[in-house]
Length: 291
Image 1: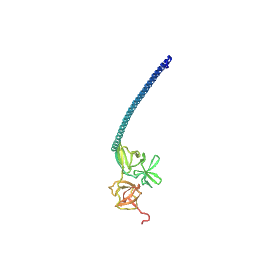
Image 2 (image 1 turned 45 degrees about the horizontal axis):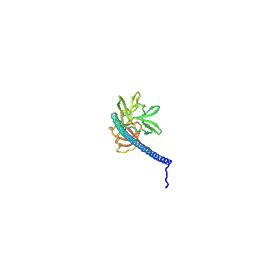
Image 3 (image 1 turned 90 degrees about the vertical axis):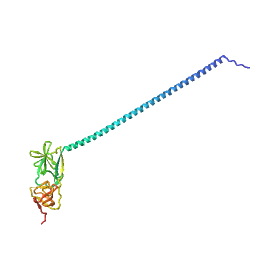
């Protein structure tokens, strides 16, 4: 039988192959171990990064909560500031109201008779008027009323400040304000001047209230016209001498009759108002064509 003999170079080849196989196995195992170690390190690094990101997100959320709390505190402070400003404004309004009431109470109350309303137009001026010049402009003055020439007659205007009149109307009042005398009638204030009385602005310490005369209405109707024959005829609010004087008219003026009571006539005045005059100081005008 054939017997195989292992030759020396065969043995060397086998040893070499075994050494190569063992080396290959060791190298592969080492490489695998290195990869495992690197994978563990990278996963550990990723987990660390995740933890860091979680921590930063927690910090961000805490910072956001702090910002929310601070903004909430600021809003609360703003609301408190708004509330305090509202309270201050209310207090200021109360102070203004109280000071206004105090000033109103401290002012002097002056009752003024009512005169012809501003803007009223008359076709002719009442008898006895006076011409008044102010700033090169002509005015006409009669019984406390100023007239200015208009396109269809004469318009009642406010008394021009600084104009001077020779005399004051009947029924004026004299008051003492801030160490000086003032004269007032129909809402106009005057001060004494060398040539008469000068129109001035109302004192700040005075509250002016207009007193409208209560005119007694006639119980008996009447019609017609009368002419004034007295030099100055008083017009009263009722058909008796006990009633207060409200106006005056001069001789020659025509009055329209609207009623009567005994010896008194209820007439329309030149300024459009109404009042009572005594018939004995008037002359009745006959209508054209009457017998």
